[in-house]
Image 1 (cartoon, one colour):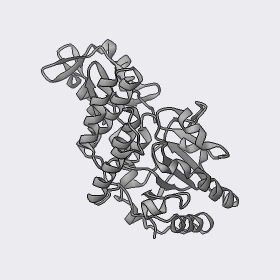
Image 2 (cartoon, helix red, strand yellow; image 1 turned 90 degrees about the vertical axis):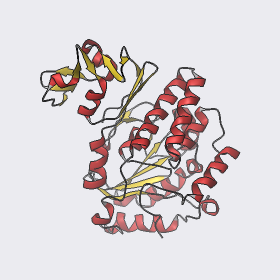
Image 3 (cartoon, helix red, strand yellow; image 1 turned 45 degrees about the horizontal axis):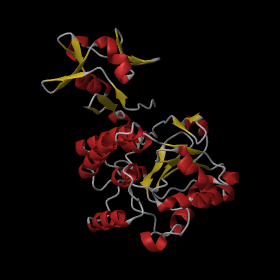
Image 4 (cartoon, one colour; image 1 turned 180 degrees about the horizontal axis):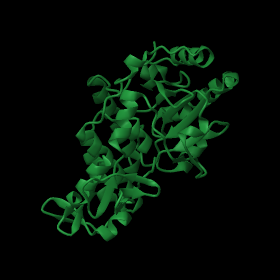
Length: 336
């Protein structure tokens, strides 16, 4: 999976369309239009009718995004290209775990198939969540199950690896950073901690589930870690899975158009914050939160980017409102 950061473009908005000279297409989106289709490196997406991508002598970026099956947002001269929809849908329906290309805290890029042949626990967390303190619990579980080959892979939905590093002391399993929330998009993760069980052949056997590495937050969340830990032990040692493939398929809903736009605007807001445009960042992040009020990977993750305390009064106000709406979570209920 290729991660795309928001980037400035030479595109122009004309009558509601975003048009660009084909000579600048690759610099704008990382994909070049060639006779065989839209290509990036050795990967090509066939395009049957090249002319259908054009408006006059320029390329329509919406049509290009459709050909790539990716949502996009262009605003203020910056383009954000979302993750391929087909990858997320294949994960939900066919249970094929999406690959990723994410850096660890030192910048080394890792892919899911590095751990081919092992059962894998994909544990997403963030420093804006109390689950940042869960890593020692996951380390203890991996140590306990070392003879089974179980591999914990933690992924932080954070902006800066150095914010994550203090919480990884004594942690030996890989800790990756998903700054652009690309893994969160392809797995349709709506809150952390979310844990995904992935088998030896990169198949999802238990989709998105809230699981904790210990009981430090049980009074706050009402979710004990022990049922999850016991289920993981049974899976690691005996191959027992408490979810049928039929129940696993479709347990994770696809993103709605509003949710897709919210995630694009979150990424644009994060980009603007990096560029020092605090006003633009706040505007985009605020709009993202309005579009996806039940997605904590959007509205709570935006808090530190806006200079707000993700553990402060504003969080608890929004959190209570989310709970009043039934605490929506995109995935399975916690193990009981």
